[in-house]
Every structure is written in structure tokens, then in C-alpha cells.
Length: 223
Image (cartoon, rainbow, N blue to C red; front, side, top):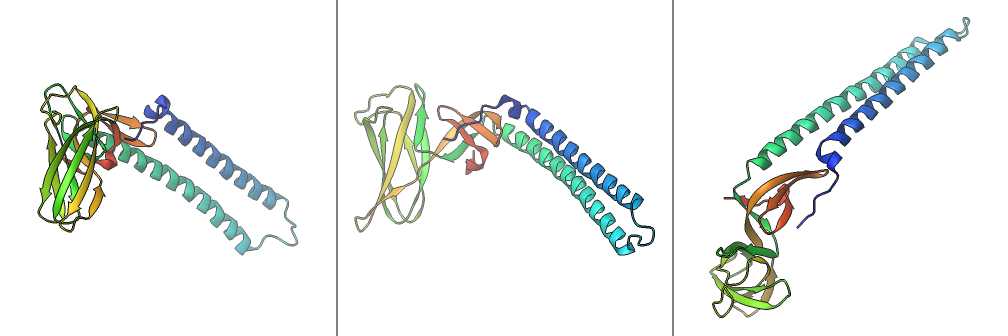
């Protein structure tokens, strides 16, 4: 799973404000310098050879361009802040829901189970091998695939002998065997409840029960 940047100032939006203030300051200095340069040029021009209208208009056009770029940056920054706020609201709406995310890990509590899916490439059988945190074999779950497409699996939290496993995080690996006997490794996608959301310096993250964090962009399905 992806990790969240621990920059608390970024999380509070302080770095964004500071950056915007610095940008505006730099833009103001650039415009002031340009005006000063143009004024000095007009003051010291040769009266017998005054500046051509085309040159003067060209400098005015450059000034307008610089000012326009500054205004555009301000607009874009405001638009980006609006999008960030909207993303936070969308992430908060997922709290309490279950999301499907790509993961080779799954988690169970003392009584619960774990579910997920894979995308089968053809008809055959998909085997889900579950191992514990130490890499020790726990159980294999076999699910038939009638054709290429989504194949769901469910683990009840017990080992191969029917004994209840301890609560915690486990690994799952999926292998498909088609009707010709060819084996293919498949990526696994796991369902997990969303406990909360975190605003990282590079985006929004969901905190999943027992699995840690994942970017909101990884969510494939909400239930």
C-alpha cells in the first residue's frame, strides 16, 4: 500500500499559502522592474531619435503578457484549491463504506472474513493461496472460472483444518489454471472498510481497516 507524506504543514495547507505568497511577490517585483526600465528608457531617449511607436507598443504588449500570466497563475491556483476541497469531501463520503482496491494483503478480525476478486483471463480454475505474516501456508481456496472475467473469492478466516486464525494481516496470491493446464499469476483486489481519510502533500489517502493507506485513485469500486 502507498504511504502518506508526514509533512503536517502540507496537510494543513500552510506550504501552499506560502508558495502562493512567494509567487505573487516575485511577479510583482518583475512587473515593477519592467515599468522602471521602460520609464528610464523613455527619460533618456535621444530627442532627435525618439522611440518608434512599434517598439513602444511592443514593450507594452510584453508588459500585458507578464501581467496576464500573473493573473492566470492566480486563477489556476484558486481552481486547484477548489479541486482539493472537493476531493476532501468526496473522500469523507467514503468513510464507513467498503472499497475494492488492488492489494496482495487482506485482513480479518476475530470473527470476520475477507473478500476480493481477480480478473480471470480464460475459463479454468483460480487458486487463492493464503499465507500468514511469517510466510507460512494457511489455506488454498479454489474457485471455478466459467470464462474470462471477474472471479470473486471469500475467506472465512480458518486454516486448511478448519481452525480459526488469529486476527491480523495475511497475504493472498492468485494463480489461474486454464483448461489446457497453463498457469497464470493474477493480480488480486481486496474489499476493505474505510476508517478515515488523510490529506497528504501529494493527494488524498484512504485509511483502510487492517491494511493501512491507499491513494483514493486506487479505488475501483465502492459498496
